Amino acid sequence: MGSRMKITLANAEAALDEVLRDTDKLRSRELRKAIAKYIEVQKEQIKALRRLMN
Image (cartoon, rainbow, N blue to C red; front, side):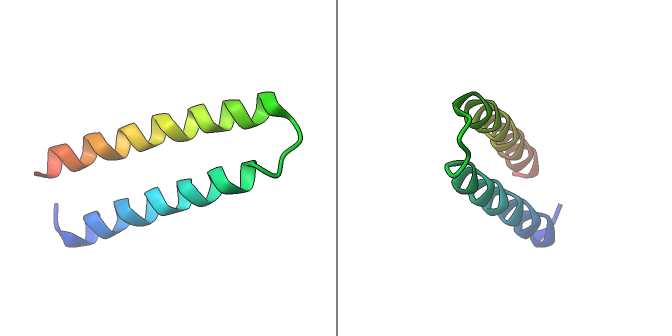
């Protein structure tokens, strides 16, 4: 996997951070919590992919 994949993973992680910031505007605490948990799982998947690439 090359640098293009690394850039794609970095963009995905940045997008997840943006979604997380946007969820702060939601009124439902349960929904914010669920989204935050989902994003954390996705970030762990990105970390796992990075480990596989190295």
